[in-house]
View (cartoon, rainbow, N blue to C red):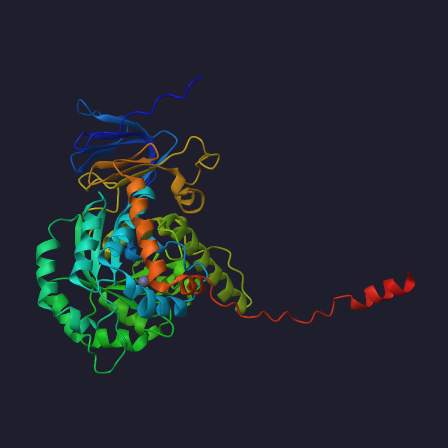
Length: 485
Ligand SMILES: [Zn+2]
């Protein structure tokens, strides 16, 4: 028997119906809709329901046995760094800071930012991440910024350029005339490419970041800021932003891991969102992934992957790691008191909500995307993989998304009503061309740094591990055996 020939991908503008899947709308009731169709006409979800009538010429996607969910939203990813995928697998935050701020980050040319963004954008779509915030703090010049936007516009995903520049103070770059005209010219023309300003607040009592916050206010831009990073940003920064009236419901606080109760109260009271990058916080040392604290303060949560220098841009891993870290902490806190957790507070449906609606809300896109509801823009993911023994049975669909599924199970992805991944294949993406540009960037960076520095940067020194004396080690036993022989 021959396998059935693959069906051609639906054309842009062609209506699409996903037939007979288990739909997770991620609505307020956390509904689960078995054997349900989702009809997409133009850019929007036209209808959600059983056995829908569809317009003539509608492309049919068989979603039976699969899960249909909203496209995922990554609220903080340094896309420009993706050309160095995996290089920092053994880094701490200190190594990252030295490498990016002082050494190699400076060597990035505009075309290198372009290469990283392009790869990251394609990777996001492949994994069902339909909206990604490009936390772009490598924009040393306007040419770098042009290159970043060129790459985002070349890929049919939804993006937010969070403009930043680690090589200058935010009070400097934000006030340059070139920055303003760039924003007017290239950003905020549609909900496909949003705009934030990305900078950190050091806690300097003079609060020099005030100037950048004022520019953000004039430009009507939300601010996203790494806050609560052990050894870098902390309570003073949060207090200064709040006391000066710049904390609001559009502020995205990234990590928020090493903070006092007081800071969490300030964040909660002003309605901002925390973007939690659990895998990052676990390995870099910003602090314990904070969802267990955020839950008790009622602070909205969104998820993010931070950077592919360490991790993949894959929100399945983010959901899984976040559930694990939150539950670990809940058990640990209970054990310290001699108690046992008998019911976990954090549920699988909650992390799926954080990965979808939570992200949309953080970006002010809650009425546009983030859930599967008629009238919304059609950013959709079908998880289905008939060749995988992991895709059945689907008994607890939210749990299946969080703990069982992975990027290889992403069968179909739509953004703004357009099919961008079809039957496990990206549509219209020239991956060999992306590979070539990334290889050129790697070659440039390696030669700019020199092979020795390149190797050293990737393989930081390993501290010695003192193995403890073990009273049960039978050294005498061996001696005794020799003697008796
Ligand atoms: Zn970051």
